[in-house]
View 1: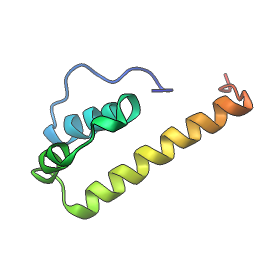
View 2 (view 1 turned 90 degrees about the vertical axis):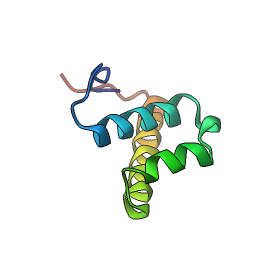
View 3 (view 1 turned 180 degrees about the vertical axis):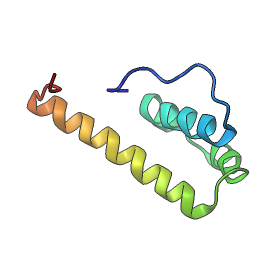
Length: 75
């Protein structure tokens, strides 16, 4: 989100699913349940889901780290 809001429409179903999953994790991680993971498994392999989750967590952590330290984006 530091690079702007996500698009409203995605042509690629996998990209749309990944973005919406990332938004859910960022906004309401307690809502990620078995049903959500089952939907992800319709489009992604277990390895891809694992990588997606790791990337989302890394991005959230890096944004939080920057906020804690008061870092600002370079112009």
